[in-house]
Length: 288
Image 1 (tube, rainbow, N blue to C red):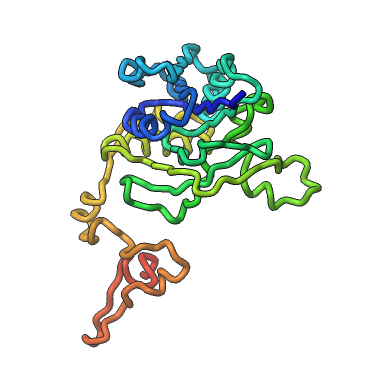
Image 2 (cartoon, rainbow, N blue to C red):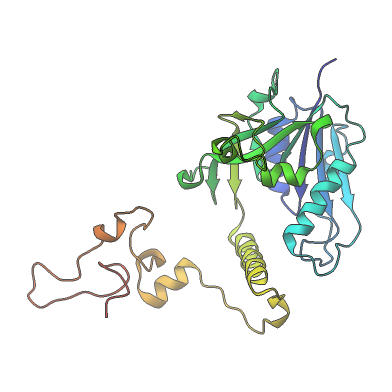
């Protein structure tokens, strides 16, 4: 009997990316499981955003709705784990030998790997190319991205464990590290991670939530209840306010070890006693 391919994701409001995912993998999967909660991961009530009517004709789609409120005083990562485990709890239609693939909603597996798929280890990791903001804006700094995970149903005890603790770096640990899962198969050219492919307004909202969640975790308090005013500065706003080209306060890209030394010098070679200051010159804004 053929092992079924069951592709699973959690969902918030990513209808655009889901449509792309659906059209890429629909011919190769037996089921596509979408799990949405009636609450966001901070515990606030939300609308159900998945456009199920658009796909209800396709019996491959399994739409799971997590209706229970998340426990109070949980941080967003714990609530995210609860939603992931809700998927596993409801995979009652899966057989022990079926392959359970789990991705975040912005990770799309390479469908070529689904053909005649065979997992020789307990877990599998798909290494994916990362793109950010635009489909053609390749992010080499986060590539390869350890995205989609896979495991046979009979071996899958926790989706969140598979996501959080099954990592390629585990393979580098000594055999004495029994606490690290090493029964892992790596799949190269494993698809695509489309990070923040949204409108500018949607990106702004997402970044706000990410920042608040991080501060909540550090400060151990929900600061969202104490925000009285907020202001968003776009690169264009910063350009107007600071006269920095394209809003780049520090000049050219600062992603390499040598970038600080490639900045414009802080003096002129042509005009005596003419000096420059600011973030885009060497050594940067720290110059008095």
